[in-house]
Figure: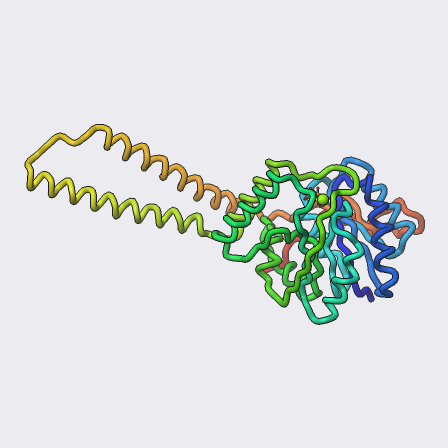
Length: 329
Ligand code: UDP
Ligand code: MG
């Protein structure tokens, strides 16, 4: 039986993965816990898959899943959670930005009864622009979202088995895990650590990717944008009503006069703008419904530690090709 599973999504991390594994083992061995490490190779185009396979060959505590292409970190984390067997699961990045030496502390807090232990990073060493943008984003998110999301809280966290089961029971294909972690609830504790630069390799999150991720987060967790559209419509209707009454009163009291052409154009342009924007918001939600309704699996597996056929002394088994979809209704 394993006490702790460490789930590590890896995308093109061949430069750091061996160093990461060594540090992780060095941090966990002294604690005497029985642990396993679940690597998920997210369709890397470099040698990450080979590195992970080698680790599994040399260390019996290593298990892995390899995707057929890049499906994104959310899918990789999901695959890792599904393959984990431990009573507690620690999610961490492969690039050593999540220091392995903090894991024993997380386990300690978990033993005190917390279901989620969150390591929250500060923003030392990050560009001023990025920091400011992130701050602004979190302010907006806090206003608009129905779940609470805290600045600096990433995916570095420990989940108890029942929290993992709660996460796995959520079937949506559009997964915004920051929101999901907050949605499942349970007793959560967090502590802060100093932000570390990535050890080697490159960040996969460019500005555009981050922006889309942000929009995703805003939309996938609430229907407030739709609510806002209704409110805008109502206010517009009310002000139009007042304006119309005022014109009628004017006509009755002062006789007919020719109304301005400019007012008309302004009203038309403003209204069509609002209508188009609202349509866009609705379209975004319809797109999401379409996406969900296809009910595709979250990822396709190329190989796992027990389906590989080339290793020494491995039994030949049929290749499981598709990550188990959601449970049947
Ligand atoms: N990652 C992944 N799939 C992706 C992108 C990233 O599995 O499509 C992994 C990556 O290997 C790393 C973690 O997610 O372990 C965080 O990625 P990164 O360090 O690039 O993000 P940042 O720390 O810059 O936010
Ligand atoms: Mg990183």
